[in-house]
Image (cartoon, rainbow, N blue to C red; front, side):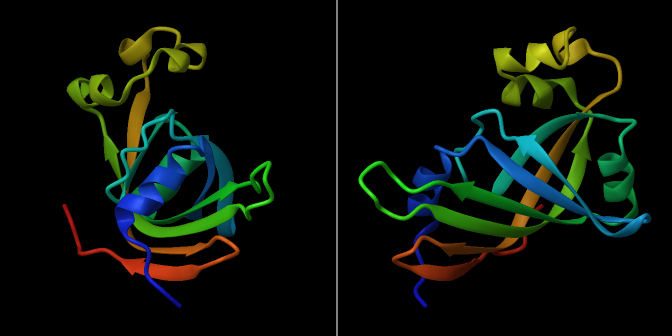
Length: 148
C-alpha cells in the first residue's frame, strides 16, 4: 500500500462530478444519496454540496455529523483503470450567503431558481479525516489532520 499525495488525488477528482453521500440515519444504519460537487474540486480535503434545509440528509447531519463520500471514475478509453475514492469525514452546515457565493456555479440555478437567495438553501461542507483510494495500479490511505 502506498500513499498518493493529496495534490495528485485532487487532479483525479477534478474529473468526477457526482459522488455518493452517506449519513447515519434514524431510519436505518445509513442513508445514501447522489450529490454533485458542482466542479468545486480544488481538493484540499473539503467537499461542498448545496441542499435544501428541510431534507433527511440535513437532519441526519444535525444528529450525527460523521459522513462518508464515495467517488468513482470509469476506466479511460485507453484501458487505464478507473479510480475509486472513499472519504470519511465530518459534515457542517453553512448558512452564510458569502460562502454560498464562493461555491456557487450557474448550473445550480436548475435546482435553486433564486440562486443564493433561494429560501431554505444550505451548504454542506464535508471535511475529510481520512481518504482511501484504489485505482487498479495503486491503493492507499491518506490521513488528514483535524481541521476546523
